[in-house]
Every structure is written in C-alpha cells, then in structure tokens.
Image (cartoon, rainbow over all chains, first blue to last red; front, side, top):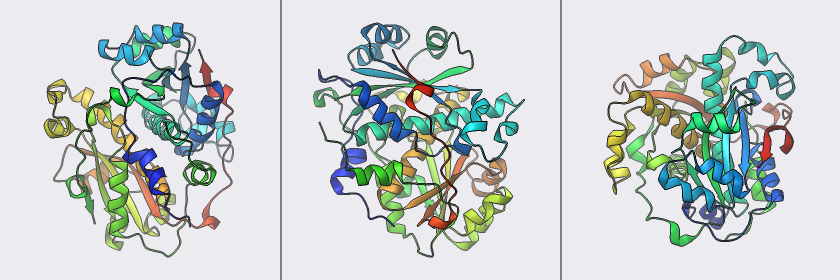
Length: 197
Length: 197
C-alpha cells in the first residue's frame, strides 16, 4: 500500500496542469521522448494490446505537414510547439499479441472481426493517449491535445505504407506559455455525474 | 516549468503499478471516491465535454448485479473488490456544454450528428477512464480495469432511465493483493511503435 502522492505532485498532474495553446522557446529532446514512452507504455491496456503507434513530429517540416491537415485554429498550436505527437492506432494490433501477451492465444480472439478490433484499438489507444498526457506532465512537460484535424488526410500523408494505422488524436508537447491559456472551464461536483450504489 | 516527479512517484503511477485480480480486505471510503473524482475531472477532454458518467458499485448487492453481466473470469474480480466502477458515457453530452464550455456555442457542433457524438463520447470518456486509473494510483489505490462484460446488459440494468448512457469499461478499485498478479507482460522498446520525424 502506497501513501498518496504529495500535493505538489497532484497539482502538477491534475490540479494546476492545463492545456496549452502557446509554447516557450525551449526544446524537447529525443531522450525526453524516450523517457515519456518508457513511462506511458507501462499503463494498462486490455490484454496488453498496446495498439498506439506514435509519430513525434519534431522537425519544422513534419510539423508543417501535420498543420496542413489541421483546423485553422490548431495550425499555430502545432508548428509553434517543440513536438506534436500523432497518436495513431493499429487496427491490426492483434498480429502483435503473440509476443505482447504470450501466455495465451489472444490473437485468435480478434481474427476475422475488424469491427471488434476497431473498437478495441480506439479504446486502448485512447487510454495510452491519456497515459502520454499524464506521463508528459509527470516529467515536467506540458501538453496541448487536439482532435480538430482531418484524420483521413493525416493517415494518407503519414501512414501511406501502413494502411491499418489510423490517427486518433494529436498532442503538442513542450513547455507551456502560461500567457497562452484561457480561464479554466467549470468542473462538476461529484454528485453531478457520479453515483455510489 | 516543473521538475520531474520523484522516482518513487513515477514508480507508483507507472513503473511498479499493476492491474490487480485480487484485493486486500480494506475498504475504500466515499471520501476517497470524491477525492478521486476531484482529481480525474481536471484532466483534459475535448471542449471540456466530460462525457463520463460513473456508477461506483460499492454495496455487495450492486457488485453482484454487475458481476452477473461479466465474463466468468471477471466475476470474482468484481465482487471481491471494495469498489467496482462502471465508467459510462453520455452520448448526449452536448446538452451539458452550455455550462461546461460556456464561452462559445459548442452544443451546436454536435446537434443532429449522433455518429460524431458517439465517437467523441467514446474517445473522451476513455481519456477520463485513464485519468481515473492514474488518479486512483496517485492517491494510493490500485486498479483492475476490465472490458470483458456484456455492455448491453449492464446498460439495461443500470441505465434503464438514461437510454443515452452507454457503458465503456469497468474498473475494480481498492488495495491490491500482490499475490493476485501475473508476471508483467512485455513492453516494447521505443523504436518498435514510435518514430521521430
């Protein structure tokens, strides 16, 4: 049994963390992206599916390509960030299960049922996206997640050689500029959306 | 700019945390569930949609009802836990946007497009599910997330009066019994599923 994390850690992960629209001029290193992956990959996914596939757009060229497929308001949020991650999912994740979940034949649960694979890939890659956001915050980075972009265009541009990889959402990562954030939107009390039975 | 959290915090959140199948005989209080919600609700969702609706099954009766709709292997994981959360999503979350995202008419983006609402509710309630898992770990609790249950049966039983609420996944919460876990499944190196462009 572990004690709760410190108040400052809870602030950094949840209470004071915000989604950023603008970024300080301070780079994110490849080492930091490796550290981020090594944390986020530990989060649970159903049968260890780990369906997320990530392209970290770090060069000006890659960010410009991605921004070209984004909604107008999101373009500057992509190109001005040190890194913008394309979080995608592999609809054929089940082909990796023989080594990711080796103690049973989990691949066979998904063969021939692409609808089930799509649902499972969407759920589990989204879980991984949330782990990415919280792992980034845990190592002192800030995030700006976005879903306002043309998924089909991103897939055609970045995943032409991987037709079963589909973009889920994108997320700028760096050191957020406090001047770029809006006032926090309301958060509901427990009773509004929760029930104890 | 915040420094990275301590190694022990990163262990508690990611590296040493595990999905539990069995539970110590130690209750989870309603206060802890409120604390959990007050952390997880701060995590980002698109346009502050917060589509998750949660039923925390805490009584023996509620857990038995839920277990009746679960796969055979999951039943004991539900009834033996102090709490099992049904994480659901409101397909009509857009009706709450006038107060959750008050500075623009975000409700109008979703009126008449239930397919878009289903996708957005699924993505954003799943993000909230991951925030729930990590917030639970952050306050010293353990989790056992599960998707092996009959969603339609759970919805009919628990959400009969809310036909637009759909279960996403369930998650046992408590103090995990280290003897109930399996060896950790493999986690891929960065290069396997990541690319820096």
